[in-house]
Length: 192
Image: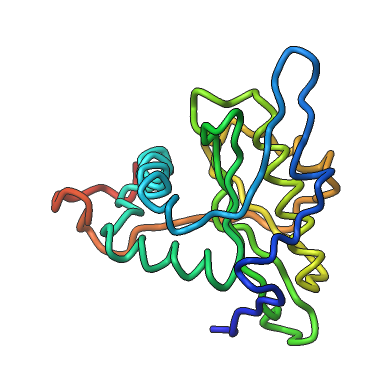
């Protein structure tokens, strides 16, 4: 696996003020985006459980609190994990890593891991503010490309990403290779 690259200390916020404070219009108050801290881990664990529950897989994405906590701590310290807030209330998150492309080590790619807005805050522009912060961090980290993925059941449409300059380059498909459902110990049928 390629080594991940981080060109900023975890205390350096590589997001300019114009993107950290995305004004969502006169009716809605401002959405702020900030880097996550270790104090955010309990909230992040809850949001990752929600994300995993909605992800269209026949097995659970969420393994254990210990594993997820270790991953969150690594992202906070060495890569990118940001939170959108309004009036001090957390609204959503985005996480990403930067590393060399497998075919060309000189080509750095920023890869989004999660882009999630809590259900109650969808439509609030928090998602756009998070995505803009991810782009700014990726560029400041020296990335040449940014990649995003959308779950098959995502409410976000490809057109939203295309407005940011993305274009569809591949599609991902998932197939179960074992009959065990890790979340319940039951089984599932690969044909459904």
